[in-house]
Image (cartoon, rainbow, N blue to C red; front, side):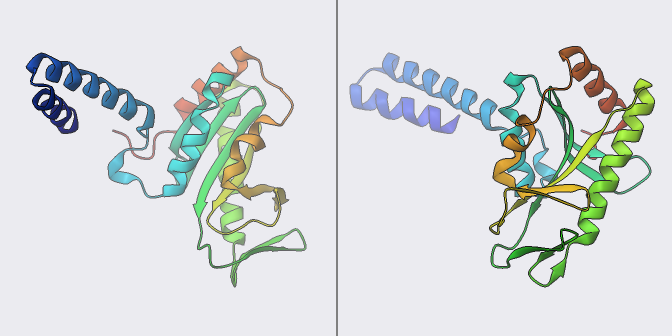
Length: 212
């Protein structure tokens, strides 16, 4: 708003017209409001623990026009675990955990069962992602009275990932920039009504980690 007022003042002085200045200020304020509405994150500012989460959220917003619904920062009841992004759409249900890793350390896989970031074995992170998706699947399935599969994934930002999409210990691992393609390239399996019912059930059984 200060920028808008400043723009109006400068314009008014330069053109010697207070009416023009007021008009410019109003237009600048409107433009600023639109910009903020389009860029604001649904993850509260006071708890944004990860730039990776915000980057993934920005990508997932673009899927809304294609019928996808997303819940961010959802807790697994009775635990400290969190699903960063739960996505429900025409191609299925996905649990996406966003990770920002040190880009200086290489990422490699061993025997399709072990994921390493430099010298660090990321098995605990894979097991956690798989467990979160399994818990979400069980809770949603129980709420709806039918089986709903939640596909676990790890979206990594920072270091180069030497593959496109690789399933390691039943978790899909890929570069964070591929999250939309990973979701949309699958076959359609849910109707619009099913997407909505699963989304509502997930919203009930997976509470916000950071309620407002």
